[in-house]
Image (cartoon, rainbow over all chains, first blue to last red; front, side, top):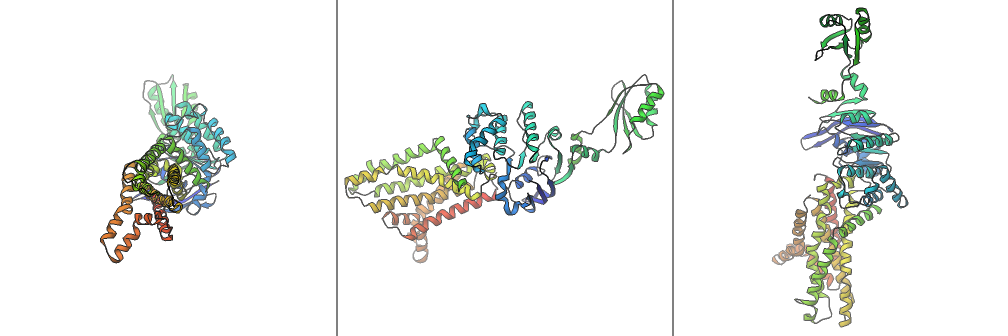
Length: 309
Length: 240
């Protein structure tokens, strides 16, 4: 099921939490929702899940308007809210049965689905414990299990990996990737490498507006557009190397990097690469080229670039 | 319909898991039994084969106990945030409110069912008016339904259980006592109006053994308004 969001707005008192955003998520796509705190990520997710009302614009889930048919669309959505609120006084297995029944899973399938989710989320040893007794990581798994219990076509996960240890994070990411092949997934997170690891597409939202939309690759190009390489030489004179590198046709700037060695950061003009030229130069001069690495703009830099003012 | 029952069943389980149900049953049966059989204007003092004294005691105990049962229903979910998870499931706000209402109503019905040995005992002592007993129980059920819906509304507007409890008692007190007292202070239209609002008047008229449609309509409208207001305040989603 596709999700289409059209000029969606949400206002809390005087503050506009979501300000006319539009985007589309296709089936089989995992979209990462990024943004600083209070950017409007959670508000958008709450509107998709039908928890809070829509002020302006609309959301279409499988071409049906959430404004009109919100209560009927809820059964297609699995939702993991931000702080993962659960009934702490219920045993895991009872809670999952309860969620399955509420989501309209047929009576005969409830125990099958529950057992499947317990296995999938690695809760077998904890299934009879009360949720209040579980550690944060296990509670998070219960939260994921309840979101997926009715095999929904859309998964909305608000910070799904908070509180998990590194092993669990890897497992949960794998799980999300697995599920995301056939479903529509929107997840929000603060952890930038996570988005690169799990998501097909990144949406960056700031102050209620979408400021970037694309894959990690396209975002990098948008922001930098210039090739930057690290060059390390041996058998060369520092000053001479600096001068000859600067005179290459497409090179914009050459900066010696910190440290004693002959290492430079070479920036080229937009749309051009100087790597071949650098290699030729070294061959001509008889220098040994020991490093030639392209420098990728880190996602953190893109994020900061787009969201700090 | 199925969703309502699923929610009601969970609430009932949680009442019994948290001992709340047992405490309520023991206290209710203890109080009503004590004042019906042993103390005050009990059955032996009155000397009539009538359950009037029991209905009178239950009238007061339910007034205090029901807010204690309803206070956590929505206030706790508001506080812990579980309300968000509940309302994003395939249920409507209305189903949540009715489900929770039903859970408390069933618990109160169970408590009242435990007092059924009373009429059986009294019937063996003398000539018991069966019609009056049936009407008395019906009156208690209707009264409970009214207080549960008031309690549910009080619980829906706050995330603090104590506030919900006190608010339910405060609103309940108007229906239980204050409208009645005020009615006697006014003459004419205002007096009649306040009299019509007084829950105790309607309860008395039912427990006398006459089922008047105005009384039934009165209780059902209190229930309806209470549940509707609870649903409206739930749908506002403003309590964090």
